[in-house]
Length: 78
Image (spheres, rainbow, N blue to C red):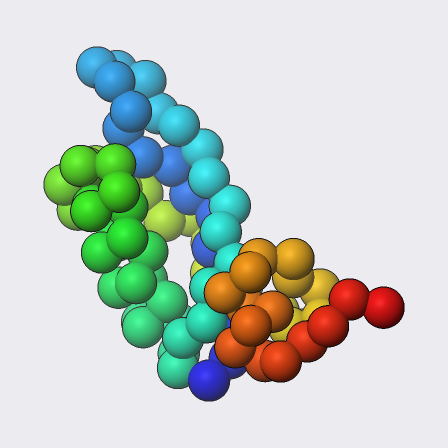
């Protein structure tokens, strides 16, 4: 499993896009994109066609402060 940072936007209201940047844990870039589409669809009730992923980049897990990444890799604050 690897840590990824995903940047993009989703349609929050008519003709308005809400930008996002999320750190997640996935096996590869396709898995990261699938997880983003699934999560935003369930949390924000946005269909997949209104979620635009601009960039997916693998990151060092120590660079992330996202609780899911920190817990997965067993990182602790110093």
